[in-house]
Image 1 (cartoon, rainbow, N blue to C red):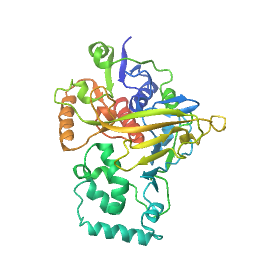
Image 2: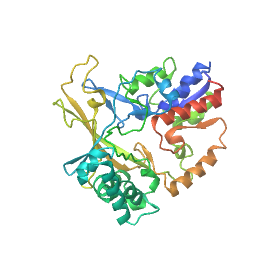
Image 3: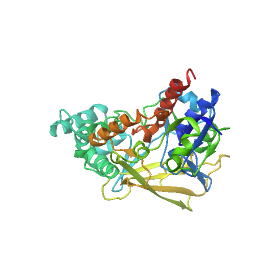
Image 4: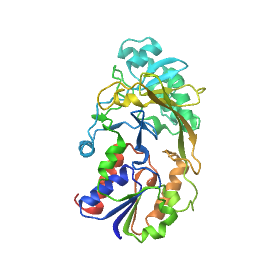
Length: 374
């Protein structure tokens, strides 16, 4: 069969474009080299708990159009992301707020907290932050940087904070209130039933072939469709001809525990440099520890996350958007502009860190451009 669109990847970008294309009468085939749909937002059920297999995903957005769109395919619960930082057994509130400042310095009022941050910023002599370390100190002071930012960030990125660009941490939430909600978003939650169920609803009625590697049979697949929507790594598409783009990867150690509660929170970040993992996720708390009937779940599932440098065969997670890699991506982007009937999209296709709502907004925008008026 010949299709109007072959969509490579069944993550959010591919699923949204597929849905919009079919809604306008186009024929579509979705393929994915993984054994499951939903890309990195895939959730699988273990002991009645929906486990975020590729890391925690909390949907949050201020974009009402995107919020209304995802609610066509799933109802969302009222989960609020309020992680905890663990520094050698000392527990601090995240995002950085008055609870954090009170425990760190004993301050009680917002005025005292702001003065302490300004004092430490001044002592560090920072006026124009040139790297992540300087940016972090200018935002939260040196004490919080040393305990709650430095170790975690260096584990996550595998590089000293002085070698990381300042922009990585510019959106770090810092609040002179007692607000524990990590995201400054009007809409937030987890799809009831999990992300896999939501993506399956997007792909309802659309043919999907799993365990299928586009690049292994590229010529064959290209003949099957008028256009290809490619959401895989852009450098892999060009067989790494200009060099390999760098990513950070994540390894998960997941275990089922025969206890009802391990840490009392969905996410606990381990911010000291000595602890090898960056955080522990306790998946049941994304859905308040209840099953679909509202009953307490007797067991729990935890995942320890270990950040690592990406190598071929690993899952690429976070693009390393430093100068070297950004320059290399621009060279690949120029190559991509010469490819006829190929659209590169999503986190890997555009070598860009995307929040989920931004991926969906991008896919909707491309759908309008490509399909017209949908």
